[in-house]
Length: 171
Image 1 (tube, helix red, strand yellow):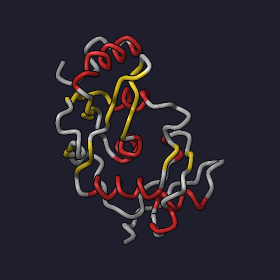
Image 2 (tube, rainbow, N blue to C red):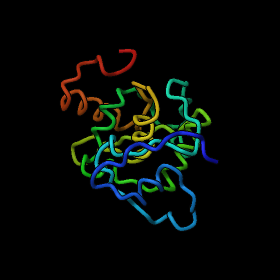
Image 3 (cartoon, helix red, strand yellow):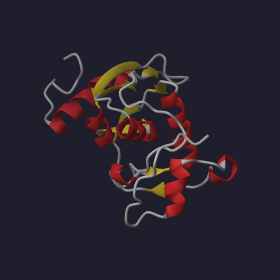
């Protein structure tokens, strides 16, 4: 159902069809294999379908199979930067719609960061991170990390971003 929001101005280089698919997904059956590269957060459309309150608290849950992982809270911008910047906003409208639906209900799954090839990498959660950044005022988000990767992930992030401890919530 339409939520009464106005559609943003469509940015140059973004197709109207893909913009509308992400603003208000209507055809779940035929959009599952579609992927669009919005290139940056500013190109993503406003949501026209759900009521996502930007400052409402979000409950973060571990996805099935991640309950034994360690949860670490990080600055959302740092988490965004872990993913390949050329692919961060290469998104699927069905996954995007699922995340917006979850956020409208006040929850989402924690993104998963792991350590491979000498760097921290985002294994799961690109749509969630982009939606949280676009539709909420959340500054820190919990991510899950396999116990054996925690030390390497934290060292990598602290070295790459010269973080010190200030970007880790509660540090």
